[in-house]
Length: 224
Image 1: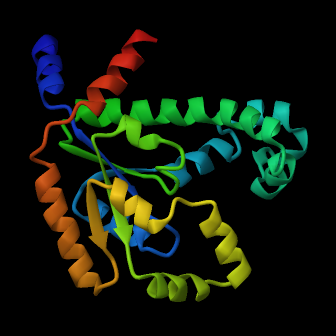
Image 2 (image 1 turned 60 degrees about the horizontal axis):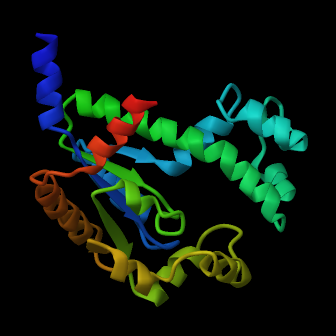
């Protein structure tokens, strides 16, 4: 019976879709719509938050490299930022610690839901193209809205300033380039109902697709 179950799981590996978009484009809203439809979602920000929280797998190694970043047994992001901003060597050291831990979480997520027979998994990654994360996915969906609408949304956030927004945008791949690289584009410059309808249509398309990214991820996991 175990052999039969394993074989079935291999034949039904989930399709891996990335979700990204520039600040203020509505990615969180779209991600929530996927969750409402029962799609399993792995949020990169939530993974890092877990790793940095007290007891998280990143606390000890990051703390060893950057002692001042540990506050009350957890990684304080503001303190960590002071340790690495403007220091390329320190940033690479941090990435060398955190990226393998994030990848381990990703593989566990894929393995768990592949075994459960999930047909589609969504990876909510703010800096997807910036970190080349598309290489581990079957497709990428980008959320996009008109620039003025994007600006209005972001400037309405507490503590946001025009200078902060410009600094954030300068670190992100431009919206036009994201759209060019995307397999699917979700227009969030419309009503919530229209955006949700686009998500429903995309889910219907993706659930019928066969991907190879999950097999690659699980294959690498099995070899290690």
